[in-house]
Length: 128
DNA sequence: TTGTTGACCTCTT
DNA sequence: CAAGAGGCCAACA
Image 1 (tube, rainbow, N blue to C red):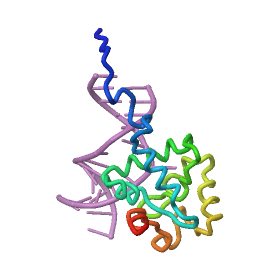
Image 2: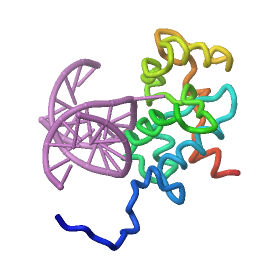
Image 3: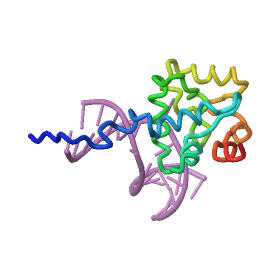
C-alpha cells in the first residue's frame, strides 16, 4: 500500500470544496429565482455554461435539502415543466403546495403557463 | 479502486 | 410522431 504524503489540490470532492463547486453555483442561481417564477435544470446548466450537465443540477437539488439556506427546489422543474422532483420532497404534495403559494398553477404535476413563468437565468441575469 | 445510478437534455432512428 | 441512446459530473456501494 502506497501512502502518498503529498496532497493533491483535489484532495476533497469539489462538491465539498466551497471555493469552486457546481452545487454552490446552482444554489446561488436557484435562490435568485424571483417569487412566482420557475426555471428548468437545463436553463441553470446552460447559465453555468454546461447545459450538457443538466443532470448535475438535479443532483445538486438532491443535496439542496441539506443546503443552507434551503434552496427553493420547488421552483426548478424539467424542460416539460413537469414536477419531476416532487417525489423527492418531504411529501409528494409539498412541491405543489409551495408552488400554489407562489400563485403558480399546477395540474397533473405540470406547471400551467410554464412558458410565461419560465425564468431563464442566462437571460435575466445577463441584463442585470 | 471500478462500476452503477441519478430530480436531465438533445439528437437520431 | 414515438422510442432509444449518448453525454455530462458527482455520490454511493
